[in-house]
Length: 199
Image (cartoon, rainbow, N blue to C red; front, top):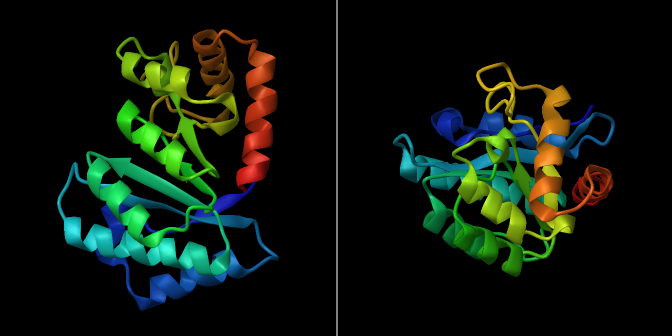
């Protein structure tokens, strides 16, 4: 089991020099299982926009300095997420945009501008109301997709309302295979390769 370590945007008000040092030390230590900075980013469902932006920028810079992958969370903040990434993140950065539920337009921009970026898809792609996410899955090359649960949230159909866990990943992979018209085994194999390449 490997981990990402960072400051979620909804905890941005807790970011200080001590937390920054703790995150940097954990990611820089090659003797532990921390392999990425994040999840970090912007979540405008709640307030603290300026604070979230400052903390997101700090973690992008940290990941760049450490040569570490970055796990990004974006919710109701597409324009600012893209603007800050363009300003502060190298184009060759290894990025996992986790629990992708944003627009096809953002997906196209991210995939076009960041060749080492992958989009993570959760149980949302299995939901009856997940049609927009399935359209993004359809248009995203298989070699740019990561499988995830976002546990304990977003359990896939037929487990909606349950606690999401890694055992639910096959449901997500099967839905992606169905949307893309390929075998589930191909999705698993390619997503495993994508994960190894990203992390």
